[in-house]
Amino acid sequence: MGFLITIDKQLIDEKYWKGNYVIVYALDYCTIGICPVVIPEWERKTLYRTMMNMLETSNSYIVELNDNIVDFYRIKEKDYAVTGHKKFVLLTMFDRNYNDRH
Image 1 (cartoon, helix red, strand yellow):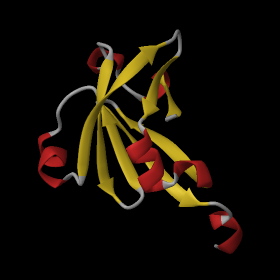
Image 2: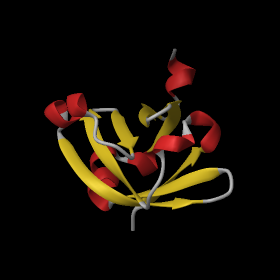
Image 3: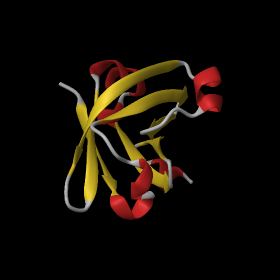
C-alpha cells in the first residue's frame, strides 16, 4: 500500500489545484515534486514521473504516493517536510534524528 501525503490548502493557490489527479516527480535523492499542472523544467529533469489520484477535503488535498515512490525514498523510515509554492509542493525527506546530529 502507498503512503498518504496531506497538503494543507494554506500552502498553495487553490486556483491551480482543480481536478482529481496530480503529477508526481522524483526530482532528486530527497525531493519529490507534486503539482496539478505540468512544469516543463521538471519534465526535462525528472528521474521518474507519474500521475496519482488526489482527494480534496475542506482544508487540504490528500495524495496517495505509490509503492515505487514510497520504496525508493524509504518514506516510511524518514521524516519529511511539505512546503508549498502556489502551483506545486515539495516533499523533502530527512533521515530520522537529523536534527539531533546538527
